[in-house]
Length: 245
Ligand SMILES: [Zn+2]
Image 1 (spheres, rainbow, N blue to C red):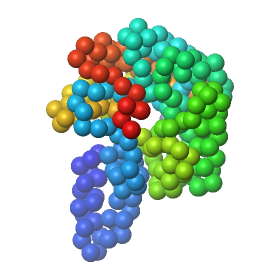
Image 2: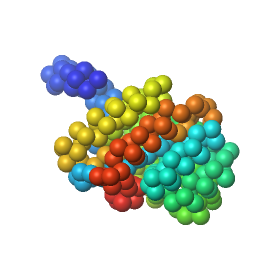
Image 3: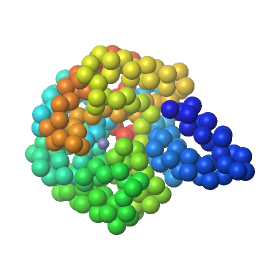
Image 4: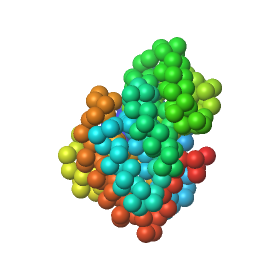
């Protein structure tokens, strides 16, 4: 995917391809997590050995409780980017996440592609979610991750105006469609180890929920999280995102 995008950008550098560069560049900036064209987002600092486990799209009554048990058994805290409408449906579970010492963040109210959503609706998606999460947690929500990583300048501006730091990631695999926990853990391990060789901390995304199904099956992702904890706990430090800014 990266090479085809790069090819598109280079192809657009010719004068005749100016429009192509604009369109290709926009798609790249809107969807590629490492892109910084649309303002600063928190990804991960140059601190090899630090790992942030982040879980998106919950709370999920079918799988989040199991995940909380696994995290507790390792005495590790993680960051949960909650879908506002899911949190409203499961306030006790959202409260349990906070009570266990985990950090919660805003992942929008209904998980739309915010690169394609009008500014007033983006504002509503973010503000409604923060209000609901703040009522549940009793504290301001400081972190926001855009659904699908999709954004445009106004999305980050609105998030910042609501007091939140936009967050992306640097370690992800398609855990939502992979039936094997071993494969999920193996792919993430490969990514984490490469980041470490590059002297970078790892901001790892897994999904304990599904934006399409409030009780979506997330067994492989939850089991993979346990495998990563077992593999890295001895020689690495697991942190929540507030350790990074
Ligand atoms: Zn999501």
